[in-house]
Length: 253
Ligand SMILES: C[S@@+](CC[C@H](N)C(=O)[O-])C[C@H]1O[C@@H](n2cnc3c(N)ncnc32)[C@H](O)[C@@H]1O
Image (cartoon, protein in one colour):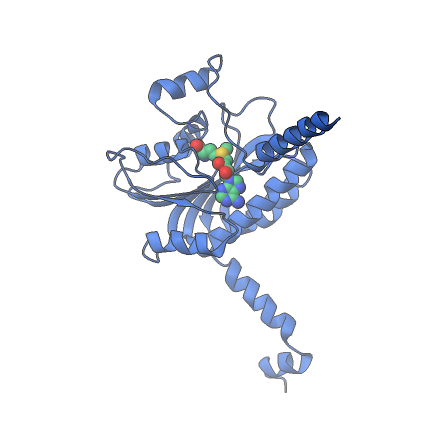
């Protein structure tokens, strides 16, 4: 009985560890993208998703851009970003340690181990860019999967809400964003509402390297309007105003 309990606890523990750290899958020799990634020395097959996006929308990343990659581990997006942005500055952020790249990495690179929900992580990114905002942000972040599709889809929307908060602080006016999202029940509301409001133009795109059956896809935001923070604080001021304050402000008292 005791050993059965121990076995159960170990299984539970493994399950928790497995769910907490959502890692990209290991090389699978039967998958063309895995094979191609290995051949090209890319750290994960996800590289081909970003490569296809940047080929389809070549103006997303200007030359010598300041780029932030959220959820960057093990680093295949970073490899593509650097290949297409030689001489630029790239900052990769992840909860997990990202293995260092060789010295001949084509862009200036900063790797940050941190949670995007922590303010300190955002501060470290800004510091790397000498207080300047980024031209382009990518996010391939995936939530800790629960195995319940609707829960995972909801968590992915939550992560993307945080990505937009990061854009508030870190993305320059007219900058661009590529972010992964799990398409589900709340997707349309998020995309057609909050996401569309933030950019001049938005698109959805499912790269070929996303598995057919998977509900993951990418949202592309072109031309960050950069007014959310300001709008938010204006609304907060209005909410705090009494009717008398408001009329006085409007010159009617
Ligand atoms: C699919 S992997 C990214 C693969 C990566 N784009 C590549 O090409 O190598 C998703 C990553 O998101 C990270 N992640 C999830 N939530 C995060 C958070 N709150 N802060 C930082 N990273 C997070 C995970 O640790 C995981 O490494």
